[in-house]
Length: 146
Length: 119
Image 1 (spheres, rainbow over the protein chains, first blue to last red):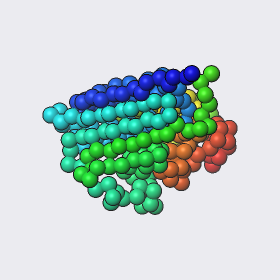
Image 2 (spheres, rainbow over the protein chains, first blue to last red; image 1 turned 90 degrees about the horizontal axis):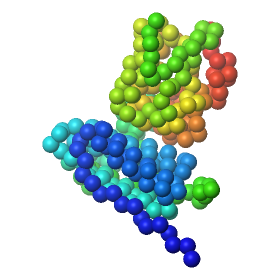
Image 3 (tube, rainbow over the protein chains, first blue to last red; image 1 turned 180 degrees about the vertical axis):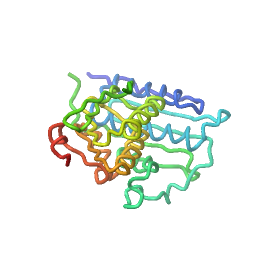
Image 4 (spheres, chains in turn cyan, red; image 1 turned 135 degrees about the vertical axis):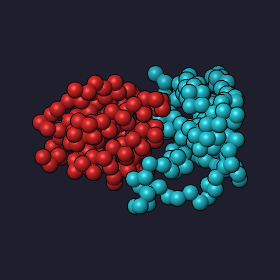
């Protein structure tokens, strides 16, 4: 009988520094690798979590050293869930300008929300807009380990 | 002649082909340095016919995309041409989602990228 490996969980508070954010993302990437994730799914998760964590540090907390970011990652063989919460004022995620419109497509910012929604199976913001939860379901066509 | 840490540049018949040193373009310091080096090619060295070859790049964040958008504007201001080639499918998908595939001239491989320049 096959017993699935236990779910990996990371629940930590990190300072509003990009190095700390990337260190936590590296932990997530290692956990995905250990759980047999690969290819396109891993790319999608890395892109989305990079957006969420960097946005939390740079735009949410505005790199304020007195503010922190709470990250929660859950990974098993079939799905990955990530929650990123900052201590900023949040934003109105229902009224984010569409970055793909003609007049904005070559502007340097505003793609994070779009990428997270497109690359994840589910993504939800809290009412305040300072916390995002996202979930990726492992694709069926990803090759099995070995 | 300028020295680069994040890119390698080769002249191919008047088109400067840029290869990236980093497999993953994520770190903010790396991205800033990369942006400075790409900008320096256009503004300081007056190389404005550029083909960026992404064959070694496995991942790039949207902060890196922003540097490419900035570079594209500088190349246009200098009446040059910028083309991108050899993007792996996952990165090409990001360009498609964000509609940046309409902003940049994306080519499948280096040969077709070079052939697309109007010199």
